[in-house]
Image (cartoon, rainbow, N blue to C red; front, top):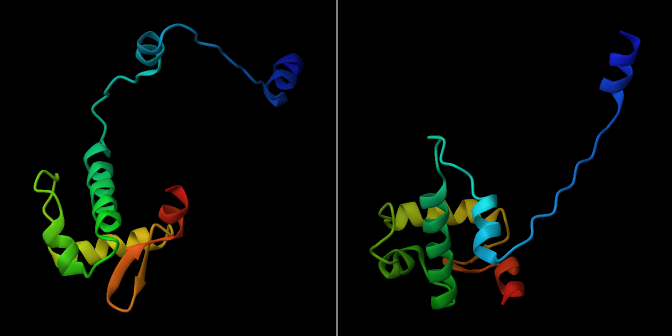
Length: 111
């Protein structure tokens, strides 16, 4: 039993190298959809919302809502836009100046 206790207390690091052409490596890294909730559509919508704010170089919640692409997973009215932008503001992706939402420090530095 003493040996098992010693093994459990030790840290182990494992590294692996995957080489090959891009498609082969990506197929090895791809995860199988296990039926769990996917955030892909949410992330796509957030990206489109941020792209719209950047493209417009800012705007009011109503103006942003009117400029959003129609192919988003969910529809955004002015209130949904402001609710979402308030969350993104916490990540410095957008800032509110008066009643205008503008690209935040993290978006401005990425360009």
